View (tube, rainbow, N blue to C red):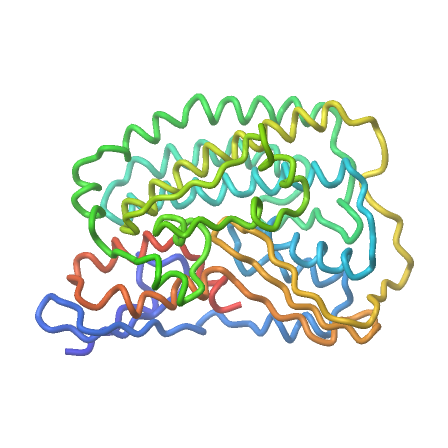
Length: 367
């Protein structure tokens, strides 16, 4: 029997459709059908100048808007040979890690919800609101921050903002065990997730799976450590708080465990960034740009470690104020592709558990 799951299925983060063939209760084959949210972002990039692109580039993964912006500005700055002020580098790193925690908390709340547990999402959103407050204070936005600029950040840090960030991180760290106690060791969650939806290391590599999904399968890769940008070379260097979280089993439970532990690491990184920013002398937070910003002719691929995995931009410039081509490599695209390989052989009842554990955002798939 052929079944259509979706395209408005409540267990997906956006509008995804799965066309599955079942034999009784067991899935024989699965075909993810994407494109329901496609808006042609890559073509829209080509008719906007480099300042305007940022407002489009931050929307595909609506849980990681700040991280999305980074790929564009870092690529343009690199092609311009531009050196960004040190304060901007550390502030960007801080904001990227706060944004990472926000993204992870959403999935830590929504995954149990998809398995039938209502309570954890309220705890997750309480912590999200704590961090949302400081993100909203500095940028004015709750989801689409638009705070990056080519050459640095939009504005300087508000007076006393670092104190409020530190207080928010301390509060979240103090209360996080309450959320963990609902998830870790929960016998129902363990029964639904352990040994289910196993993704092997070889299959993850073959499909270009990245981020926490790949690391849960033993793929020890993190661009923050392996191809550092911003201030990550120092944070992931000797004596730094940065570390790469991995598991070997590659099942739904391992993916959740990686996400949970990564949240703690991101909070550690945020604390280290706050400490460093306190020691830096006052100075500029951005570089003054010409009225018309043109990027020299050439091409460059820039990849960052987003909350969900590799977020890459391939920029081709002909020396004009708009890119000739700006190709987006989003993490969720590869992570969702692999569903066609890991769903066959599973029961229909396990499908939602597997779908939720892939931690994707459909906008990140469809672009």
